[in-house]
Image 1: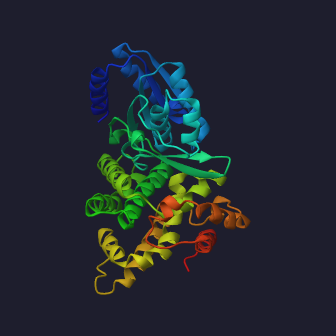
Image 2: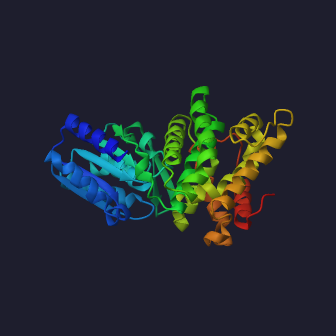
Image 3: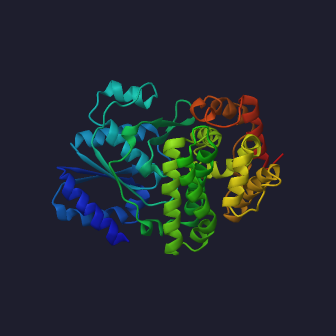
Length: 378
């Protein structure tokens, strides 16, 4: 499979004929020798390559600006992003925003404007099966001024080429496999019930959920199972396509403040919040709950549709236990006195809350956070 990656990327580079490649990845892959291996392979093209591997943990807007400055300084005309969602988001955002006036970039990163043209060509190569960043218009970054995570969205953040090789995910440790896998599932289930869902996006989300339920435990507890890794790569891709067109909702809206204030990994925040959010929002999408219960092999609830929500929520909560993920905000050292402020921040994420088939206000969001803090489903 790695041979597929190298064959494909060699062909792409020959077709693109760049004069300078900027290779964007994270320190973990740099320290593991993966970056060096790929760059050595690319050296056969005799094209200068500069590395940007300053990414550690969840990225913020400052690291995006740093990457933009790096690309401009080295006159890069092709960005190759390798890694999980953090590296891919930095790569695609910086590739889109390079060579623009600083004041314009500042406004875009502040959410006050959107790009009107592409910067330079971008190739994305994921090493996890979760974010679907390689096929979405979204990029998520920490906003330290407001202690939140914030998404920027534009068609220009889509890469020109995405190369998905499941072998690159085999080295993911169990916690990363679990959190990133449930992140992909969150994209699927939220986009399936979203207000912007269509029959076409639901087809992608359905296929992702069916594959997820059969393979998530395999990749967490038997990470060398290449068939399961390939299936989870499909989960990430299919859910990403659904997300890119139908959008997500309240789970992501509530996850953003947790990531911003406590630097909780995005996939972990989504996974933890899933049962607590759907315990509330599932009430207004009962037909979809019946369908999702079927996709997940939880039973046939067509004759008792209101029981489907309970079955789905129980499954989502059980995932946390089964995959050794945290089941409460208390476990993540969230301070209970912060819950109201978190709710205030989450209630501002109107782009996602408006796409949720349940009208959530600050008080109902605070109640969800409280239940998630206590680890109880009321």
